[in-house]
Length: 197
Image (tube, rainbow, N blue to C red):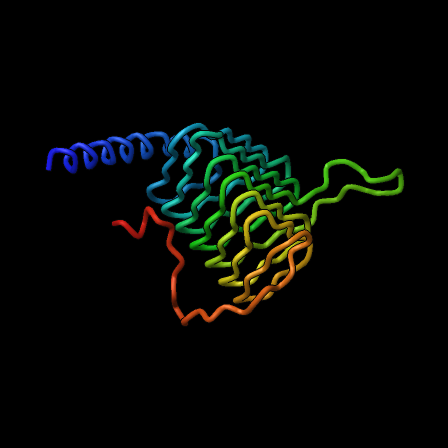
């Protein structure tokens, strides 16, 4: 019984600390919704517009999360979004992340290649859209100009270089449809922390 009480206290202290750290977002973001939480280290550089919805959660242990919004760029993050450790988001143009999205550890989301492939290549940011209820597994890369459809799952280690339809599981380099998913209407994807409450 004492172990259960102790772990509950530890969870409560962690939650309180993450809520306090979440208030840092109010200083760095253009707009932040209700109850943002950060557990661990998170580096945010906002030179454009960073709009964050309600119940935004970052768990950046053991590696920090990096979010960079360049000048004249716009990053929109919906409600109930979870970022795991080591996530790196580089927004030079426009990135939209929908509601109830989970992004796995060490995932990279960039809307610009940042370096030219050859002298004729012009680096221009291309909008990325990650729709509602998407789960992006760990060690994934989401490249410029991609749209990921509602309810879709990106398997660990995938490189998303083309649009992903709704309600599918994709995997590979480049990511390809593995199978369709049977998702009931109005079903909401929840991370393990929300499921325990």
